[in-house]
Amino acid sequence: MRSASKLATATILETEAELISRILAGEPDLYHDLIAPYERMVYVSVLSILRNDEAAEDCAQEAFLEAYRHLDQFKGESKFGSWLVRVALNEAKMELRRMRPELYESLDKSMEHEDGDYVPQTLGDWREIPSEALERKEVAQLIQGAIDRLSPIYHQVVILRDVQGMSVADTAQALEVTEAVVKTRLVRARLQLRDLLAPVLKDSAVVSRQAFKKGKNPWR
Amino acid sequence: MALSCRELWREVSGYIDDSISPALRKQIELHLSYCRHCAAIVDGVHNIITLVADGRVYSLPAGFSARLHARLRKEL
Image (cartoon, rainbow over all chains, first blue to last red; front, side, top):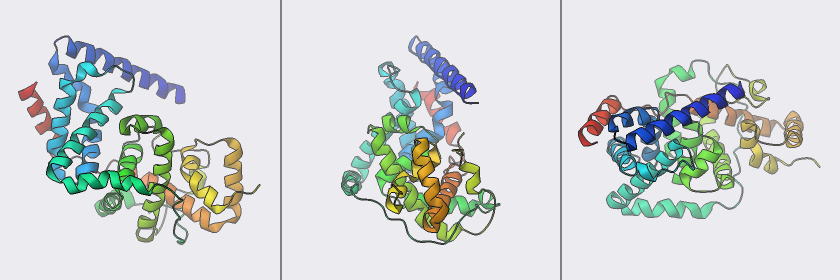
């Protein structure tokens, strides 16, 4: 399974490299195909900074245009998706600085509190996920609301790693931090989300701990 | 040496992501076999990751793709 997935990833990378060469050689229409798999990733990434649907859509459009203008600067050292997210996050930060300078300042300030362990709350057992949970719109809204309550550094890491399913390495490249920083932020973010959501979601039934004892992830 | 609760919390992501050593995994599983508090935390975090990974969280606004490609067609 894993080798099939590696093969698929290699094929995607080759296809992307070919599309990029052809776009740079004068076939701009192919840019639509290149970015199609990344629309949600870019939108959600800029939303993590701007926290406003309309502003995020405008900014995502700008980010795709900006990435197109600088496509010749993409050297293939990271994955195209990680590079694109980096462009989008920079675009979103510039937009935030322009629109809400006080919030832009707080992006950096939230990095000052990374020392020490996060101590999770003592809550009752929550062995299983409610079976219909994923089908209910309000559950998706509850989850989104909890993620939105996280401070920016934790919000971004959850968006890229858990919402988008990017690897720790790709998340680190997109955020321009080390993998160790991603891992530290991720554990804090996930524990905070559990503390926020477990009390409202823990009711009944489908996935038990047995299902992930061997390291099965929802993205695999 | 037995793993403390605090040490386990630091590793909860790695345990769920399967990015830790077999030796540490074994220590975590031993701890979980007797510590109900940590077992509830691990289960809770796993459930959160499963729910957050669902595509219905943060869906694109209706018409996003059409508006994006229309703008690209205009400006490329």
